[in-house]
Image: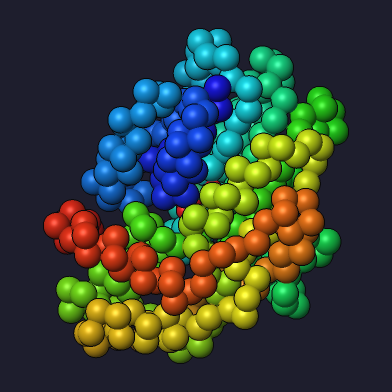
Length: 322
Ligand SMILES: NC(=O)c1ccc[n+]([C@@H]2O[C@H](COP(=O)([O-])OP(=O)(O)OC[C@H]3O[C@@H](n4cnc5c(N)ncnc54)[C@H](O)[C@@H]3O)[C@@H](O)[C@H]2O)c1
């Protein structure tokens, strides 16, 4: 059985769906916090509820007795660890909960794995670790100058994983994800927010001039790359990004305007110091180790995301943007 943390979250819910379709048994956990509208978390879990090989438990990774019970109760073979406090800007005003969840929560899981002889973890880390480096970012770069508490927490989680590989022989595959988007995505992230605001005629709050760029990566590609890591052993850090030339925020807005046939109403704000200016992944290591290549380009990805948004418009209209 695979333990998947953060299952009510955007990416983990897609990973769960793929694993379940492939016939794997999954125990999904999440504390269902209000980091985004809980309506969306419930919707994501509903999509998984028909699988007989799926169990969901409301468990907080900071609650060690609950984790212990879980590891005692189920025969866990590997852990896919995505539960985290996410959102770079939010971490600036709320650093404690980021460090508590992303560092101590990861430590709690590693300790449980050590105690219960569970050998493999796949960990979600982030492209935000590369702040200040020359692009495209490759995994050999020394990433020592994080610019947000979120990025610091991810760097520390990576460090703990390395330490447990070294000391206790665990296998840990660390993925640095690059701006993931797609159906049932995060309302605090640009693509979901822009679609909703443009569709409903709400103001888009844009930080900076919109010429900052991101290596937007479609969620199905992230899922495929992540799951491939179950076959690897040892310790690896692997970028998962589209690898193609990054796209500016202005370009994304134009594409959404075109597909929805509506104009964006943009309010400009200062660039946030915790944001990175640009991201772009070197993906040769993912190709080499996982035989992985992304398959969905940005135009097709936005198209699919808008399709999902419109099919679920009633629910999406109820979702609050923070
Ligand atoms: N979305 C991206 O572009 C992106 C980029 C880089 C890295 N990541 C990483 O990938 C992972 C998944 O990201 P996502 O975009 O799906 O985020 P998400 O916020 O949608 O999902 C995270 C889930 O973790 C849960 N969670 C938070 N604290 C918890 C706790 N203490 N105990 C149990 N569950 C808890 C939340 O309720 C949420 O459902 C995260 O680790 C994130 O840092 C995401």
